Image (cartoon, rainbow, N blue to C red; front, side):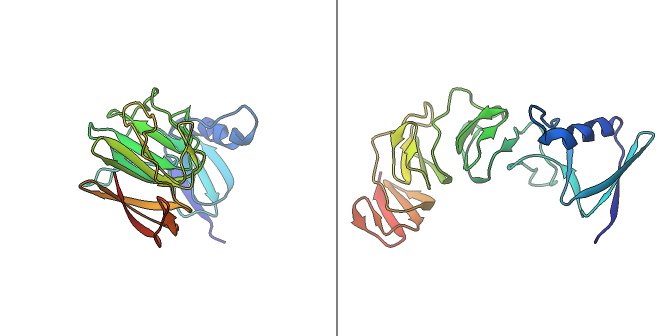
Length: 218
């Protein structure tokens, strides 16, 4: 078993760690921005302003949730990104105004409930007015000609029946009338001209036999 000791030179870190240890207790949440390890912690000793932590881990890093932006040049973690919890993020799509659409199986972002789909504004704040939701995982997002297309394992989005494939108004989150439907999951989307291309595990889409790959008119 690996036995590695990390020196975390942060004042008051023991108090922060106590918040994380008790995070599993009802009604108690971990403090934001605290550090995590990639393996079990077996012992801790504080001496002055240094907390020594030992256990079966290799790395210590900031707990950021299921999504995090990095500077493409320096590799540094960017601040202020809201924490995504409850499940994985599978898709990012720029909104054209400096913000982002996120798709996945998460249930919460930035402390707000979001069922598998969310919109972040250019300052990384969660768009409080945009909340269509989906009843299954969103695997793919595509913004094309001012329409947000999504594919995944859902059958309901924005309160409307949509079989694994849907189109939303990117401003309001309302479902459009575009509704080809598929008989199984959609995993990826692409666009060109007046067409949307879908890939997945389906064999029928839009009522027409298509084995795993299809072109659909927008």
